[in-house]
Amino acid sequence: MKPMILVTAPIQTRSGYGNHSRDICRALIESDKYDVRIQSVRWGSTSMTALEKDNPIHQEINKRILRTPNLEKQPDIHLHIVIPNEFATIGKKNIGMTAGIETTIPPATWVEGCNRMDMTIFTSEFSRKGFTDVQFDKLDSKTKQVTGQLKLTKPTEVLFEGADTEIYKETKEISEELQKQFSQINEDFCFLFVGHWLQGNIGEDRKDIGMLLRVFYNMFRGKKDKPALILKTSGAHLSIIDRNDILKKINMIKKSIKSDELPNVYLLHGDLTDEEMNQLYNHPKVKAHISFTHGEGFGRPLLEASLSGKPVIAPLSTGQADFLTKDTAVEIPHTMTKVPPNSFPKDYITPESLWSTVNYSVAGRILVDVFDNYDKYKIKGKKASLINSGTFSYQEMKTKLEKIIDEQLSSLPQKIELKLPNLTKEPEKLKLPTLKKG
Image (cartoon, rainbow, N blue to C red; front, side):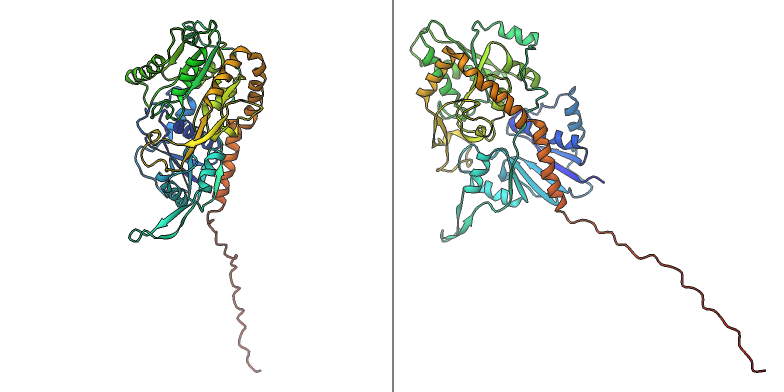
């Protein structure tokens, strides 16, 4: 009988955690070693429509989603893919899986959540370090005196989010629909940004899209030859209201720049399949990928973009530093700065938390140099594609995941079969006749 693994995750959502959850479930199902059951949960206000009816992988996932919260027995392993304060112990062994927090210090409740589990798997070295390095004082509720220390005491692992290299790769195949969309872009040189535009004022949103726009407008305003910037972004929803909100933000920043000759910024708002995303990364008008991100638990879009063979321009900080290096990316210098309180939901950060902030003036000069001297940056893109396709692939992730799961299963108490000795029938006693004296 196969060991039962219950995966509790936002498996149906259009979110980073949703993508990660689907990859994990796919890997467990494809191994054919486990009885996989899935408990689907929400992820904030993101849409629950990510499972595609015609996708064979999604069909297999959908078959295993529990329609009622009942199981015939306790799972051998409960794999909980959420933020750590939500970790729950349901199985004989309990593993938390998380991207953690995109800053240097997680909340105390998140450390407590990790300590509830037998193990926590993080998606990057940066994410794990935040949890393993932090220590909080425990205070008496009445006297407020320090009574002890709270720190992470349970085992940890790092398991990257592997890119499907059957999909994400260099290609010249572009769909008619995408070609149609790009025909509306006059420029032959475009920088591409991919990621959610989250809460916070300019400079405070986690991906730092507001400052990316401001720097881009300022550096190319008034120039005769100008590149374009494509933003593949949205908020939590893919609605008309959300699109209009994004356009308002762009226009607000545009109006703050004193020039009548600004470069064009194009908004791509809506859902694309993985195949369409790869075509977007590979379109000949897209020459480089750009991000000013403040913090990543891993940075999946940057990894997938790097497989297009085009240069990635980003800070070598937080989660993406696992797969972007000085040799494979165009580095934007950064410093670690205090996290503004408006950047995350309440109780997600501590006052001492730091995140990455790029040097905006240097970042601007880098954008101009990549545009003016593109050929000298091509080699970095090719190196990233070559290295990352082998080291950070879905197959490599799947292999490491199976090893972690099997090690946890081997530590479970094993049933011992009682072997009784073979019993043989006792021979009948020989009855001798009674002898009489003659």
